[in-house]
Length: 537
Image (cartoon, rainbow, N blue to C red):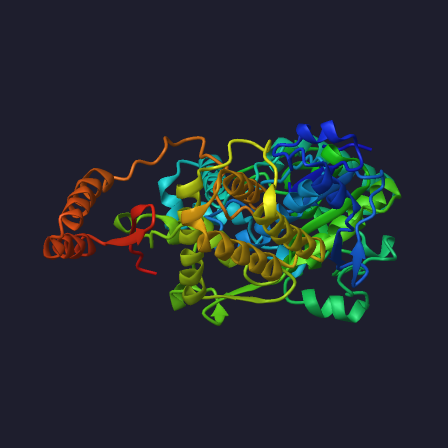
């Protein structure tokens, strides 16, 4: 049954070696590495079973994966992106195991009510509310607002080096399929119409609550008692599939009159439209366990009579400096708040240092994002940049680990891959990355050609797995960034080099001080002076 959002992945393993070249990024031709990868078991904590389960797919080596995307009424914040990074790491780990992956993520641009998050199915649509806000004044209509924040989402997505999905469906592009799904639910006795909308009947689905544990009637009624606004609802736990509203800013005609879809039905429809009735793995933030994912299960399984998803993965909440993110506390950060140049009101931080920080804690535990941790990861990124500046970026995957040093680096990569297949153990994987970085820096000035090839292969493998070594994404709407300081800094570095060569240490120190006043830090390395802008984190 296809009704044609959230993220979707599909993967294949155990195929002939040459099939691996069909990946967006290849794990390379090393038969030994491929064989080792294909023998690994990929374990993940499954919210549904409350245990760490080995991923066993419906079709051997073929993984279908859906993970919920954002409601685009504002900029996505770093807490949102922690969840998106988790999904990206599932994708990268699967590909590093030799699986191919078909990946889709949704954009919710209608239907998410302000009370949806507490199961009330009431309140105002978040998109319409955003248009009335101070920030919404810049938009002519809600459609422009949705387009603007969708574009900003994709830009931030690329800044953090998240792999671009195969498809990114929008809720507003799948209204017809949602109406069809609601009609089927009514016909099957799982939904009913009132004067204000169409609701899913929770009592028609006996296993409602199996994901979240919210199974007792009195507990669910306690959760929603203050937000139920429709006296015609048969049960306070019932949730909206369609809201009748001929005055809503975004509305479509349906068998129940003008209105718009409920938030939960959108994801069920888009998942089944692109993946089929049954999927292997579904992911999102822990705030989506109830009610959103619980409602997705009820709708989807009532439509098809089949299990909706076998594995459910949820990323825990993020705090900043030990407290819940809040604009009033000054600890609320979007990606652009951190990475935009200081001249534009940002902190000028390397985006991959932000990604690395979001990965510093295990996704399954609450994480405290601190500026101290971010500073430390800026240093790690600088060390990786120094290596890349010396050996160059790997041009493709046609490189091999060779010689004694290559054996060491391959072992470091395998440690990282082992960690990622054990429930995405990012702290251990990053430790392997930092260990390899240290080994390379220790002999950076004396690398042989054989060593250099091994280093480039290691950079390729580590980046494909973790996405923090160098960026492979580009922002569609922008030209490559040009640093305006380059033209000023390089001549001064040349003058300093000449002064040092002639023994004029006083002049060399003067130039260093001048650069420091400009916000430029100099690093003297065996291959020459390197520079960077000092951050204000």
